[in-house]
Image 1 (tube, rainbow over the protein chains, first blue to last red):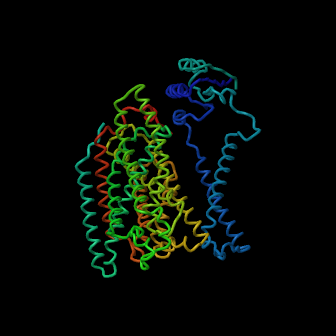
Image 2 (cartoon, rainbow over the protein chains, first blue to last red):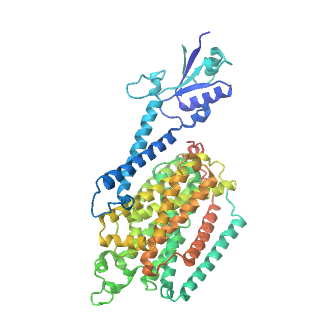
Image 3 (cartoon, one colour):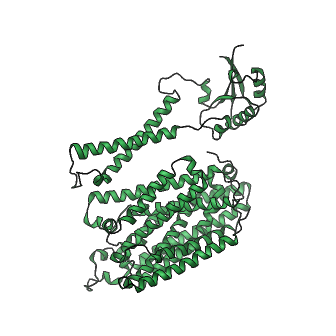
Length: 177
Length: 408
């Protein structure tokens, strides 16, 4: 039998949440949810793992701090000691207050850009990449739950569709894998 | 559900007050009997009284500001814990009274924490006391204008605190359209209060703290002091909420509320650091004698106090409160919060003491710590007492339901 994908379309995130809760309770695995904005409290319901983006961001941040420290030391102290306002220019640590702003900015720069780029790559949403959401309406005002029969061998497609009909669903679409 | 002030908590805060008082008396007579310190013991007492008066007043002011901010920004998450902020700013009149007593004592010549209060510095014929620079600030520092400002600030804050409390109790009795109407009134008044607060918080820091080092000035100073107050208020409120939760109160306050309050501690610590460092770095870089004198007093003579409190107020929250789990762990949050709030008290000490005592300031002693414990006891007593007076969570608010379901 060919595997199927079922898309259940909802008009309201709260309706989607309660529907997802019902499905999970009945033992159905939800593959994914598509939404125009983040839905608070959805992740624990459909069993998503916590994002590791924060850790990545921290790593990018300390990389930035380290690079800026190295850069200020090399440019301003080692390669060509700069005499600015008579400030100490033979040691990095005596002059460090002057370097704090650039270290701070470069930390933020690396953390922000690194995090944004990681996010885009991980979600495969870099500019020009083909869209992966099943229905363009999920970028506007519709919310979609995606179920796959290949992950739900305990339930037939018909049974799952029936379960969805008992929720506040707006429309149900099916597609062959 | 109403809070009952347990006998144990009452005894503990009483004991803190007694212990603090004993320690302060011991510290004071210790200074009196030290031949090098005897002369400045009186001055030291007033400075210590002012430090602790201002520190706890600052906490209440931070809470009052944050409370107004919640209304002005129409925040929903904080509705459940609103009463805690009300309890914190119920201490405001006591804190204000301590500050006014210190200022009055200065005005009547009992001490010279504010050297410019001595009218002789403005008299060109008095060669011994005349100070040309301070005399040039007469238009701002003259007693009439100064006391008009004190009355305006204290009056506004006391009025706002009182009005907010009354309004909050009134909202509890209303429903439907009446509730929304009164809620929107509070919203509009809060916006107005924030405008006044923005000016007053800066100016009061110049008036009461910066003017201790009367020859020195910094435009950023007011924000820096305000950031310290705000951070201390955020720590106080989260510790208070966690205490109440550990006693089984506030059952509807969930992890997300605690997480948000933890975030405020983290964020305001960074705000404080940012402002502190901005002030320091510009003066350090420009290196103009009349500007660096303030930092010279502190960095040269009290490097441990100066860098120690900076380190604790910056590095401790950054490293320990960065992760999500840390902000959701009550014990951890209380531990880190206690360390930071003590460090903010040290910050207030270093704002006041080097200027107030000059070369007579050697280290923070039993007098300062004793008065701190005394006022801490008084503060805890007042706040917990205020918590017993009304339901711990507001009964009615247009945002109550949203706050109950807060989830991040």
